[in-house]
Image (tube, rainbow, N blue to C red; front, side):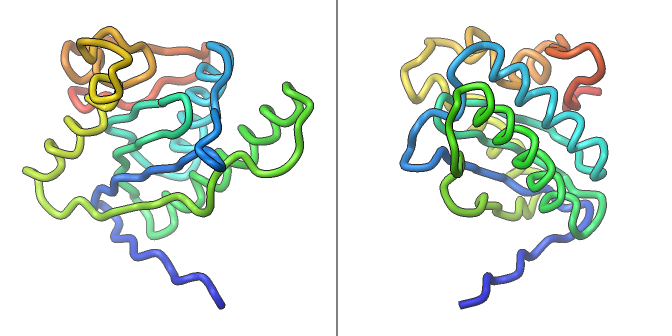
Length: 164
């Protein structure tokens, strides 16, 4: 059975979720998080996608993304997957897929829902009882969106901040 085509409207944000295969970890060390952050920033820039909010959990990621072109998100996730999965497989001498199925994406159809979605993404570590306050979790956009503090984990790029 053929895959259903994705419905994407340029300029309309989407909540993207990608889970580790069998809910296994997709990040093992701080270097993995830094690498994913750098690869995501590069793929977003290359494919004209703006990242407004993100959280990298141990076994999944949430992104709030606005595509500038019809295929921005799909191409961004393909580019990111190719680079990051290759990095993980090489680093940990493993083979096969890292991600479970295709990424999920839901349209964010209003400004009110955009902020609700952003809050949902950035509070994920609190709901998972990993931290008591979202500012304590280093792998989310919370610090940027709450206080304007940019975090750049690579020398060449950073992700967008909703306050910019």
